Image (cartoon, rainbow, N blue to C red; front, side):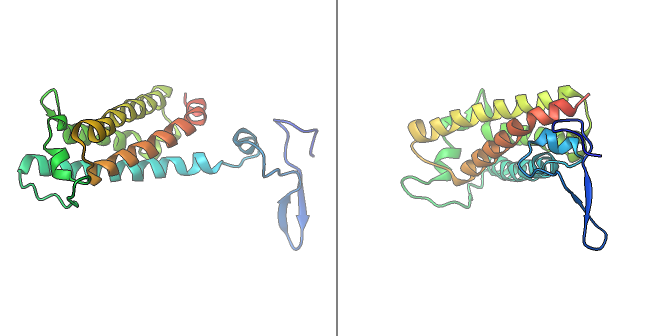
Length: 189
């Protein structure tokens, strides 16, 4: 039943051994679109929703911790303190506020939205605008992270490990969302 190469063909099925079905023409080097044509789901599209949710929850947790620390005033940040690493210096600096709003609270709001739009069910079958919203959020988040890293390195001259955790999570979300965006947007209504 196999026809010539290319899209839209049905995979030829052969048998090897006792009843084991094997795709005779399966190409492990095929791109994701070819895999989907054959009925296989690419690892990127299969795991992206789960990984995105886990990353969003991690970012939410760290941002929640930093927000609680900001508002309680305990200043009991669990963080190393030396000339370079100093969470207290970073989280109490003038740069830790943006238009009178704590950066930690902005991170908490960002990750609350990201947890919501990264629910696996919303990755699989939702309107195209949701995929675009997810992309816009990570682009904005990554832009803000670049500013915060600049502020830590050149203005505050100290690094907060908790903030770095948020930066790493945001970067990983950025890479995941941007790399899976074409497949997710094409699959959307």
